[in-house]
Length: 318
Image 1 (cartoon, helix red, strand yellow):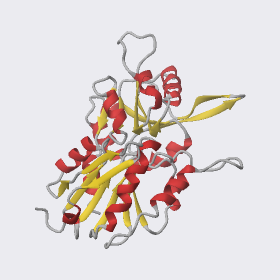
Image 2 (tube, helix red, strand yellow):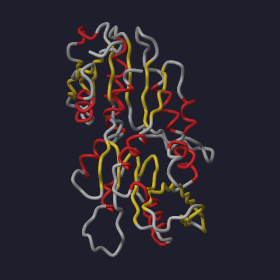
Image 3 (tube, helix red, strand yellow):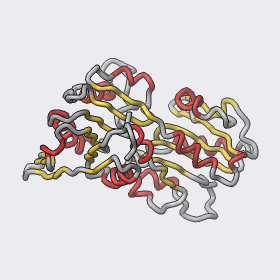
């Protein structure tokens, strides 16, 4: 057993079971524990934490997935219950903070739901060990770290090391340039990717339409990897790819930490055939922060999943 490190009992939601098992396989110090996710006839949750007395005095963690409003309440009920069971410490791992792109008011009446979610999570009961550790990957807006109250200690992690490791494995690793689709992505990630040549795109508004334009950098003959924190419809990535290809990129790939892809928008990126009229993405890397997407794109080119399991296992020891 690793000296000086703590044993952790890891609970998880239904969607995150596969990721939880991968996290547990990363360390003999992590043991999985289960919850009965039942419902009453009216649809409201009827939950039971198995062997609750056995977790007293133990370091406990919960792996969450807030993929839709419908699953958030049952998970919050468990998240608020676990620290009160006399545990030594409590950590919440929420790889994707789902309301992160709704972080500001642009006109009176807008509701900044990222702030609402942060306020809810800030009210998780304090355990015997103190405030909850909250682990989030590549949060959309850096200022959101200040939305959380003193009852939680946000730990903001990044999936970029997994991307860098994967890029170094490619046969053309010495011909890769990193592209950011906008200034926001550049601010978020450029310091983590400084050893790669960089290209920055920008979004230009013309009337009611928005277009992607090349702002700086030279893509000619390069394998371009577009990097961003999340993807929804994928429209910006596709526009960015078209601009880069037109400017002479040899091929274009993409990496996003969170493959949200509502309404199966991932289908826009699959290789239906190798002779398609549009030049497809060579690779599209996502992490397993959004389990429903991982299941949907399994085995479908150009998608490849880079697991957060090892990084989560390390973060639980903080």
